Image (tube, rainbow, N blue to C red):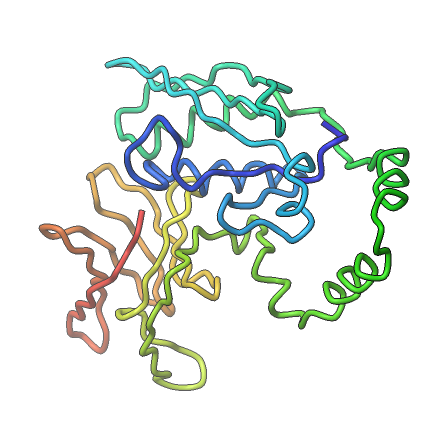
Length: 259
């Protein structure tokens, strides 16, 4: 594993018809990042990985779920499609799909526990690449241009357990208006749900955590603490709403949540 600099996460696995189904892509990237791997989405590759796909391992999710059990296995292959690593099969009996896949994937990732990963470049291959490259000045300029990129542009590829998000590559419109110096309205943002212990956290495209949803015994109903006010996030029809009390009256705001 130390021979590979990146872990490439598809936004749509072959097992599914839609991107990030059951939040599998965002969960897998989060779990790799949590263990110190440099995980990137397959449509947002760094320059060195775009030029040399052999720097990364491509993740494939094998879904062998049955009617009563959710089963997941991760397979990592190199640029020649050779299998390099296969995790143990994670199993979950949770009935709710998103929670079941999160639980099963966490169990699959137990295969990485205790692994002291640290990328180690192959010196011989690096020297050979420089010697065979006829125009060394161009190679140096490429490296320099990477170093001179503005910090905020480089940070778009960074994801941590706190700000991990599944970003669409399409432009996202936003009409956020500050109510005061502390609170911000959240009804018009696209909020991406990420699994956390006992529920989800909702992040915007910044990414910034806007709300934390706590599971309840009722399906599609979550407890929240919104600006110090107790409330709930619930689903009515096909839409999600934030409901809370303010100055003795009930407030209801529509949320645009992407799971």
